[in-house]
Length: 510
Image (cartoon, rainbow, N blue to C red):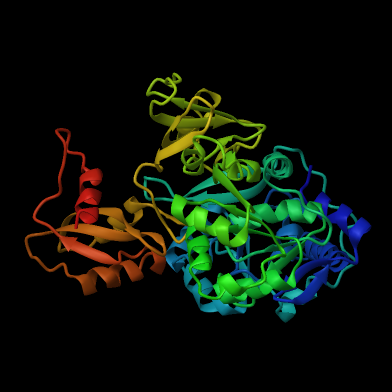
């Protein structure tokens, strides 16, 4: 089922209800959102000559144009490639080239970035700025009466998630995957009534955008902060303005919200649910958040390969304060979601006993179709019919999953996934670097920050300014190391593998 069918149906039933708002100003009701999406879809097909199955990238910060772009792509039977707008132009260029995007829907504020991103690509995708005269001309037709029919296993969302190889991989999320995620949301996460709101402070290209889908199904309003991101004071004002508010927040955002001096006096009665995930939530922060805001929290654990849907800790479980293992459960990632099987296995994919640690694997109709143009990675990750997450955890006797470590050595900072290999490969280009290893260090506000351990080469020319410059020229600013530790040698085991656990212990041990 084409996901744009949800918008088409909602617009017919709830056309006058607000669909998209910038701050407190409604920019689209559902009739307008569907109409513009249908017209843009016709323009993409009949004026730009795109054909079903083509990929179209969305490179935008959160904006009032985002949803009409996303639904127009689906309405036309095309595949969306939502891209993190904070990426470096070289990273954007790789994704545009690898995804074979024929068109990029962006915004004027990213004009210079997009010029750099497409420079040198052959063929280079066309870049169209939302709101421009050219963009508006595409909406001049009557529009496609209904969304294009597509099979359930057609590609809908190509989600680029970095891997330990240092190159992003495109997880192929089908229309069926998105439908199952949406239905699972209603069963395990939250209910939505017409007129309820979701505040998109986190990027629409990631979790917040995925959890926007069930809100379109039930005629909720997508609220875009005027800042385009997360500001505690602005967030509190929007909660006060919009009844029935739900919100996806990274744990670092929750931490900032509850530690803002204005939160204690704010009127948060309109806040219905906070869905948190994307990194570890400290139990102390969670307890404080519930004391301040009430029993309004739902935890989700998932990956781009199984969007937002592997395990979860429901609102009810957050409220079971009399359970003898209540605090232990708060520190867990909850239980398997309704339509997902989850196991913890050994190196031979055999389930390990309760309490023992192993790799977390999952299967269900929410799991991706595979990796785009990468059959080797697909075969490895989906071997034996299970998604191998690379995450390490253990089940207790009641089926609660506790995460022991994250995908290999992934760093999660401010809710963003940062893979050390990407940074290491850039730093190793410096002629003065012999070896390097990147790890995460705990940070009070961001969860973790990036630290690079560097072994200088014979010429000894590596220093912080030159390494910083190299990173800023090649990767997104948020991935740049916040600290460089120059060492004589990296700790390694008998097989020559760097012992990153020991490096992290050095940092936490001072």
